[in-house]
Length: 477
Image (cartoon, rainbow, N blue to C red; front, side):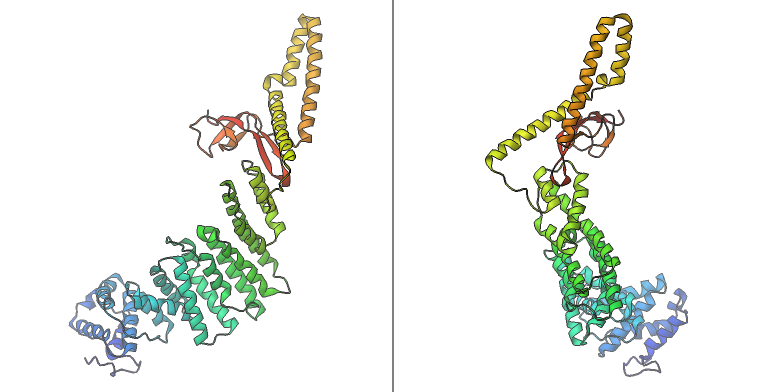
């Protein structure tokens, strides 16, 4: 059998490759077939094509071997050593194969290689591929395996997209369609891969989603709508699962850039709904920083730009209402986006006095909430006493009425100062050392029972502040 690359049959493939393809298509490649003298001669010829002087023949052979390896485990075991040996040596100039299926099997055959040429090919094909999405996903896997960080991966991919767009003179709509397909092939990888994020993950994400397109976005309205939904879905996945992207303000600035595609009109309700879901993840992240005493202004500003100040304030107010352990000044900033205005020193002294008075009112509420002071219990005791000692019973009845009046006035003062018991006695709650006092062995988040109520005050912007911590015990005790 002649192995010259110039010797082809009707399929324009060298004879040995054409014969191998015919065997693959006819499903006649079996373990028994591999032992025949005819196949061994064919296999030797096929192997020689991996070193052919014609680069096109070399890459076609890689694709054919990738196709063969997918048939069965015996076929894969036969192919792998041949590929492994060839991938350790220098590769010829890359030639794109015209058939999408061949490009897929070519990518499969190169997956085991670590040479820099293979990584370079994978980035170019990831950006260049037009129709073979299965091939693109394999190229994405290869490209991702060679990056030191996610930032580096995205930066190199963005460079390739720019090069391909310029070389092919891609118009905005065609380029947008290409980017949609690229994003679909890498969003899971970007969201979940366990590698260093790098210093500019959000910036490179922004370049990927909107940086290659004009500020007005794609021209076709339907394409614009579909691209927005695809991109927002990918951003939500990445922000939800990748902590570095979630804490990077640049990740949220992508939204405002996409909103610019619709100006002076407004995007659809679907767009705004998806944006609110992403912004909510951002506010949760903002709360995480606030719990640590950090006012992350760049992140909050980016969130406000992505939606609106009113929406972010409302979301923050909702989260703050469920987190009374926040420092009061931090909580105010979290909800309102600005720190409380500084007051004169005399006002500061007055504020300290007011805070102490609030605590006293709160402790009075706790004292009046004791079980033994409950009206029904005292009234029952009074009835028992009056039956035996009428004069003493009248004395106790008068004291009971004055006590009830004192309780009413105390509660009225508390309401005026927006102070209330929370959580209530015997209520089951999740243990939080910032809000509760209990035994040292209590586990954060475990269910506990309230022994003595706590006291909270509704502060500025609807933010609740703890005045007195509740005393608790294990809910299983």
